[in-house]
Length: 172
Image (cartoon, rainbow, N blue to C red; front, side):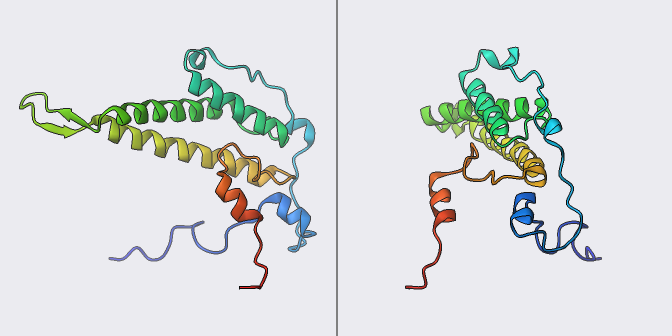
């Protein structure tokens, strides 16, 4: 039998970010849920955890993410363990990609024939995990941020920024 349609919550128009609803004057006229600034700016202990101190990549990703969350006043909304998990996944992905740059081939343990390096699959898994974790962080921010958070996001690509800023002029 067929699947009988999409899973609940996957169809329809994507939900707008809270800051977009505020800028447009709340077009739906429903009550907007805005979390108070005292909760958003709650000071948790956001020092670099001991698990990240020995890894320079993880430490840098962690500090950049915490700084970004503080800048947009959402630091108290994202659980610290989620930021740590994201930083670890990104650091492990970078380490695997470094190994992949050395060689994409390895020797089979019994036959000695060339095979694909195991770091290729490991790298893909860490990348997917990091992207999923970042999406969860981004969804929390999207639902609760009253300011535009996109242009200064740590994962924002320079080309993506240029494309978002560029508006069609009608000259084409």
